[in-house]
Image (cartoon, rainbow, N blue to C red; front, side):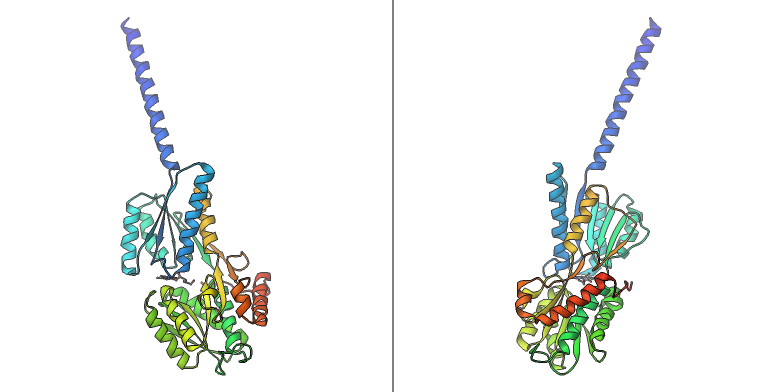
Length: 353
Ligand code: RBF
């Protein structure tokens, strides 16, 4: 009698333990499938198409995933602001909050901020576009071959500055172009500027390229002053890469009459007749595809990728109605030929970093 009572108790304890184990396992597996995404904008979105496209693509990916799978993945977009000294502590706080399974961002300075965090928070995954980081299994990076983007833009500027007034009325006799950057950073100094010069020199080796720095990504009146002084020096084509401050270069172009070559997205509408080229990044599509593949558990971490013209993530925008109306046909034809040479491999512009 006592033995059978003991047997029953033992059975009861085993059953309870099994039940608890099942509950724990169910809890664990549930936690694993609960995804949430944060888009960490290193700066502000206004005036920075590269960040707007990042957020748009990530939000679209989550919305489509939720609709297709009847799930409820959350996504938040957080602007870190223009004070770069605060980015590291803001990203640390976002990570430490453990609210998001994936933090998405974009720009080449982010890997250096993220690397130490991956040791402190080994569960956190990051996806960074427009950046490069090797051998870190918590970080996926996809970089653009901006030598191609810079080269094509330099080629465009070179064609315009050497053109006759009958083709480009605001072109002068001096063969002078310029790049106005918000700040100096490794990709700017070692890739974009050298490639811009390389492309211009492929048109004419006598072209001189001026390089000026605004000092931040928002001061449009300062960038307008810089652009005006460059114009006074004989510069007739400017490439602005200064986020919100690009607007100053656009207004100066319209007042003084010089040309602008645009970077990152389609810029013809900003100043029809003044913006003569646009070299766009497929940042929205890349953000959408990579966030979607993360949600499907297919995103590869620790294996950096580089994409460019061949893969369709850098492209010369020429099917735009304003472009077709305001930009000389022969110029479009010549620039398209260079893009095709890159596509076919005839012109091999290997990444510089
Ligand atoms: N690009 C922007 O359009 N807006 C920005 O606020 C901005 N901030 C940047 C800050 C740092 C530290 C670095 C390295 C780059 C930044 N970029 C910004 C540039 C961007 O990553 C890219 O290089 C350019 O848009 C050219 O494709």
